[in-house]
Amino acid sequence: QVEVAESGGGFVQVGGSLRLSCVASGSIDSINFMAWYRQAAGKARELVATITRSGRTNTVDSVKGRFAISRDNAKNTVNLQMDSLKPEDTAVYYCAAQTRPELGSLWYWGQGTQVTVSS
Image 1: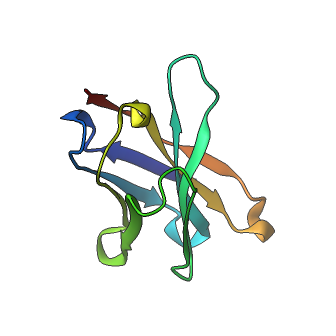
Image 2: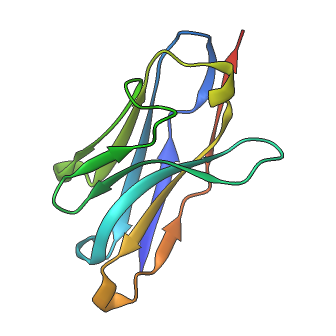
């Protein structure tokens, strides 16, 4: 069992920055990779960034160069640094963890944190 909890959302003006954090607890060693997703009002949830167990990162094209995912192993935390924010980045941001394939590739989700970018 894995639990993840996000923090750091809020209200920011266009061009501003926010840093989201996600703390994982429980069976940490079962995690294969962690990810940030977002869901804007009336739209489907979409992937934003991932970080693997080995530290390999990936961000989707729409945020590449503006967002960066990182982790702090000592704190079991994954962060999402968001710079040069745009109104279209407004969404609820979710942290997710997926377990290793041999453990069923199970997904665990946080409750989400709202990010609002105002023009």
